[in-house]
Image 1 (cartoon, rainbow over the protein chains, first blue to last red):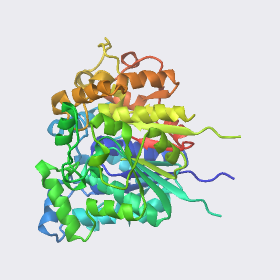
Image 2 (image 1 turned 90 degrees about the horizontal axis):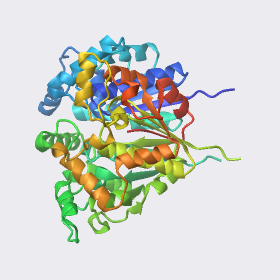
Image 3 (image 1 turned 30 degrees about the horizontal axis):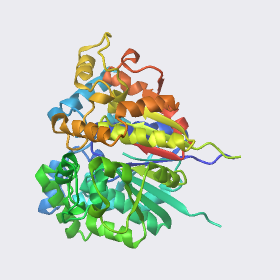
Length: 159
Length: 159
Length: 159
């Protein structure tokens, strides 16, 4: 009898390249028959935002966060050589050129592969993000749920 | 018989939001009966600095590092949207508003919960930080001690 | 019979201080009889570049990446207080002063200690880096090989 292996990733970072790394490892781990959880917290939540603005009632500060943060995976900058979005364009260009997958494609694949995509409710609250603003078919949980998965994890990463 | 679970976190980063994430996970893991170690190295040491300046003898470069680095958790900037400290103010504001815990409160809680807070002696030496400049009741150790904890760890993260 | 322990590190970041932390932990883990793998991906690949330019045929974008990214460990900037390379100089200065090891020395030690240094072929392709441009005696592999090592790992870190 073989035990199911498990991979958990905390996606804290809001950069395109870091989120790409997270989703590449996550999708790869599914191919290795791992159960995979990506726990999106802080700026990593932006990868789950819908592209179009969603009308929800918010306080001033929450509105400001909402405007300043990238709306969805495709809008995220890179951690290196960003140059006002140039790094992002370069990365997307080379991804296309080499027939690799873009971040939105990697996220779609993760959904198809039943990766458990979780939004951290505590940081959603802090940043003023509401469920209506995030993509469908994800789960909502706190750090306790993350730890329950991670303590059984073979590969646990913070990205 | 159940074995004690263990969580270890290397806190390398010196940003308010990343340190918050580290201490939220650490305090959460204690609630799950984990033994928890936070190993502060490089810029993560700044979370352990006393707020008031401490008079210690230092070389020029060590003085410069000392002046340039934030003195304590409350002075740390954010990894995103820092805007000369604005991000930090916004985060603190929303933390207050949502009755969440600030970083200094999370650190106090960690102490109360007997989380093993370790300062990396090798990087203290590099950055010219002396024990008198760091908060009380922490431990001092090197990478070997970290590895001894981590190799038994269920959840090991680098933040 | 004791089982061999294993440490795996994904080195994603291209900063001098983060790479130092990765290599210090890696070399320390060898001293603890761990089998150690460092999987270099994205900007972490720059730690493996040869210092001298290597003449290889490339497209325009790949040439641009090649010019903009640091050529080798010794050229990498720091994640904090970089100030156009000043942070790097300060770190190197204090490393010398305290008889600690520089990043290139840590990388040499890693090789001597038979740490498995892997370059991620997928991101090499994206960034247009070719095997001729990287240092000798390293391995080339993809995310699957990383996961095969990591799922047996006691300490798995993403840096």
